[in-house]
Length: 117
Image (cartoon, rainbow, N blue to C red; front, side, top):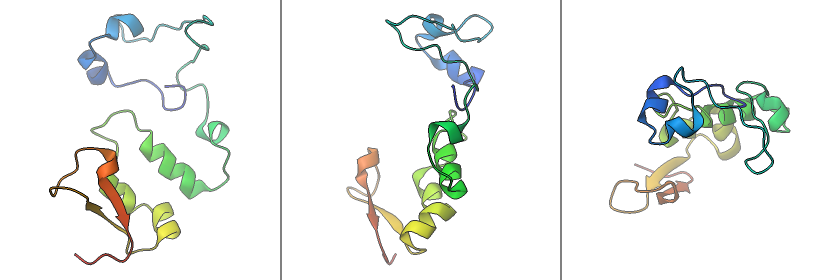
């Protein structure tokens, strides 16, 4: 939240522990206690401050990975087409599912260069 802002209310509503972290108006409880960690204020820090890189394409790739709402966050196949990935690994990088034709975990995706489908 410190980098990307607040969770969508629909996501907060799905949480079983929302009452521990959010008020009834969806405001996060701002806890400043060494036992629980440092006070983190939503949207109080820029990605460029948190990730020491001057590569704008890389920062855009990371920002896409950090989109809080999974409905809006790009999936692995879409992110494989990101210009930063393409510049690093080439245009023909594809992801093949390692087992049973569908992914069950992030580790099921194996980068394969110059794969033919």
